[in-house]
Length: 298
Image (cartoon, rainbow, N blue to C red; front, top):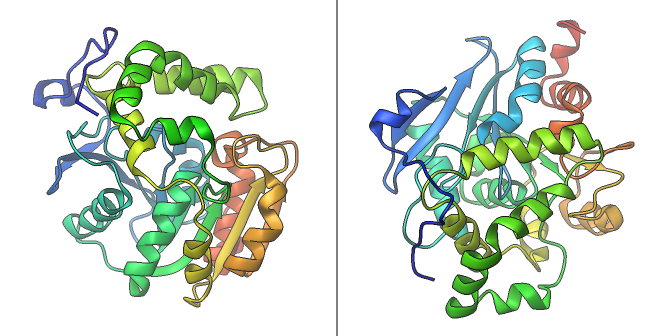
């Protein structure tokens, strides 16, 4: 699919623009990455890996809870999301794993750290763990993608001509319709859409989203789950009981393949548990990753 700028993408991510934005920026081999490293300076580090649409601000509530429990956090926007570069090229698994590896190296962080991935980010986190096992102290997987067969519309998007037409003509509506299914609470849904819509005003955003749908293996990833389950990494599996994007009907399959040490179903929660229930997920993660954190702020 050829790179394009949608008609309502009226902002450009350049050095002048980035000086007006929150957070920090670092140049990596594929482009500039937007990140925030925050929390207690000597706390154990949790690295938070987002899904297909979300900017790093998605994690604000969870990060605050983890800081209160004594953990430090690294949040960042994947290429094509938030305020990270919209690159022209393949948005495949290798790109996102490389971004994570280069970011932690550029910031001179000392492994191991606690990796948390949600939705597509869970696949990135697992792929990273398979390549950099020694860097991962624990793995937390939230509402993971990758269990379903590729549906017909996704197969059609593998065609460059079809994907380009759909992205230009219907991209914005498809994106916002997708976001509408992510959370249960209408107020949170409106907040989520506003957050993502703001980031998608930057040139190349819809291109990056649809190029990811073309390039990233979001479906039929049982082998990745199985391989990750053999690594011996202490793993926490978290799932919202009303997840309509990555349905909880796959819970038993994931449990059998990933072999998590702990599994927790969040009641009355949709696909984005870290965004919808940040205190609950933060407490689960902190207690799992650093048991002594129970002695910190309740």
